Image (cartoon, rainbow, N blue to C red; front, side, top):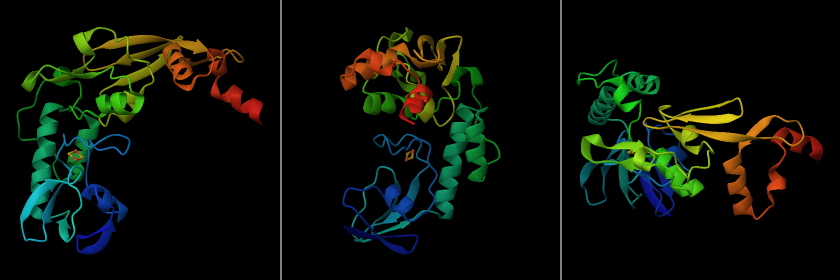
Length: 248
Ligand code: FES
C-alpha cells in the first residue's frame, strides 16, 4: 500500500491506483467528465486536475485520473489556482458546445456562468466534447469498436468509420448510457431502435418477446449475446419480465 495525503487527510491506496480513485475513496469530490470506472483513463477533459507535491518537494498540477499514487505525495484538490484552471477548461468546453445542459450545470458548479470564448455553432459538435467515453465503452466493455474518432486536429469528431452504418454495432446502447453530455440519443419505437449520433443516424430491428410479444432487445444484440455465451438464440427469446415471471 502507498501512503499519501489528500487535502491534509492521511490515506493509503493500492500501488497503481490513481489519485482520483484515492480521493473518491475518501469521498472527496473532484469534477470529471471523461472518467468512468468501467473503462481505462483517457485524460480528455482535464477537469480532474489537482495540485501535487512529491516527497522530494516538486510541485505541479496533474490530471488525477491519470496520475498514480506515490509514497509521501501531498495532494490538494481545491486551491484558487486549480479552481481558475477548471473554470477555464469548462469555459472552453462550453464554447465548443454552448447549448449543452450538462456542461452548463458543470460550469455553474465550477463558478462560471458563461464562457468568454467565441461560441461554436451548436449544430457543429452536437454536444460532443470528444471525451472518448463512448469509443472506450464500445471497445473495452463491449469489444466491438463500432465507433471511433475520425479526422485530425479541429476536424476531429466521433463517428462511425466512413460515416456509414456500422456492421460492428450491436445496438446495445452502451455509448448512449455512458455519454456525459447526451450527445448520443437512443429511442425504441415501432420495433426499431434508433441512434442519433453527432454525425450518424442508425436504426436496428428489435426482437419481439416470444411470450408477451413486446419488443425488447435489438436482434443484433441477441445474436451477439448468443455467440458470446454459447447459448442458443432461443435462450434469449423472452423479455426480462417474462423470464422473471417464470422464475417466481
Ligand atoms: S476526468 Fe481526468 S481528464 Fe477527464
